[in-house]
Amino acid sequence: MKYFKSQVHRTPFKWLLGAVFCLLATFQSVSWAQSPFKVMFDPGHSYLKPGGVSCRGDNETQYNDQVVKWILRANWSPFEIDVTREPGQNFNPEELKRSGLDELRFRPHLANESGANLFISIHHDSVQKVYLTKNPTKGFDLNSQFFSRHRSGFSIFVSTVNPKYQDSLRFAQLVARRLIGLGRVPSTHHHEDIPNEGYQLVVPELGIYNSKLLVLRETKMPAILIELGLLGDCQDLATITTPEFQRRWIEALKGAIQEFVATSK
Image 1 (cartoon, one colour):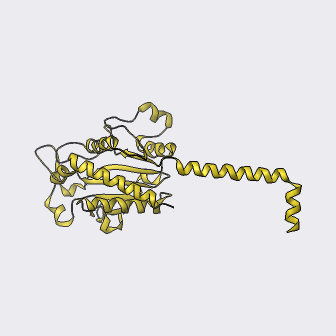
Image 2: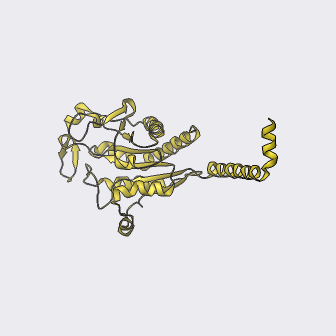
Image 3: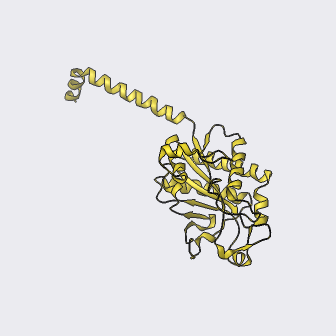
């Protein structure tokens, strides 16, 4: 004890310097705690790479962008929101060239560079060709074989490769439960043991899968990818594209984010 006292008196400058550093660290931690929680929304695909085709003959990108348009109209206070790509637009080719990345890798890169706290990729689901039937509108319908094995509904993907996997899984469960509360049902068709499927269902009753999708494994923050519904089911697509559903779904999503933030350590 005497040794400690003598050291304090001999090195007042070092003691003072240490106290200053502690004070600065405290102020910085308070600043971080008070900064807005930032959510990066990612409208899946683009008009150069449009994704699947719906029963109406429209490409997936249009549906993804419509959801993000509704998101951008909503009041997200106190959160800060951003998008990887503006609805209705492709990625700027000059920005892609400067980054040296293709548009898929550019999405997590943007999220990481922006300091986002949460990443949400918005999609509408397609199925394997065995379950599709061509229709007169130049679209594709789900056939009876699909409905004899699976349900039409939503799917949510997370990745064990993501450094925040446990947080990603926790957030995915919050979102899934709120979607179910809106009358949506989880679809388990991605778990089927057929080519290009066979994803691990980590929470079967909530339709949550583990995957190695690039936008999930290369993001540094908790990240999920949501398939809101199946493009080949015209009846379901009509339901989830109504203004009423879009408003309710975005309120549910905001509620899931609020709960996620409130229960985070």
